Image (cartoon, rainbow, N blue to C red; front, side, top):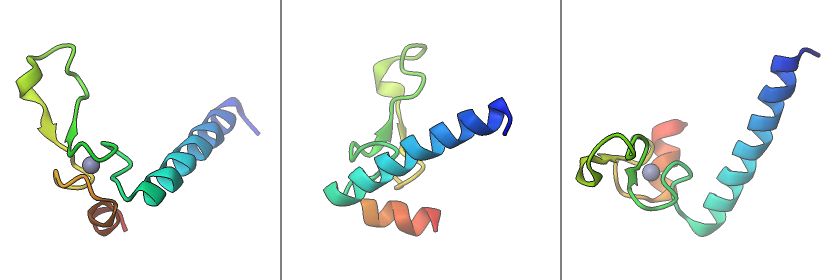
Length: 69
Ligand SMILES: [Zn+2]
């Protein structure tokens, strides 16, 4: 097993835990129910945030599932 595989597995496990937790809470794993992504907010104005691509801005786990499965 190469180093990349080790790192990949680590991310997979973290991702699965986050998805599992989000499912229990009923929120989108990508934005944690906020409905928007804050990625890059350090570089832009705070009001430039984008609707979350995972849930189309609803913040709901059910919408995230529909978008991703
Ligand atoms: Zn979302």
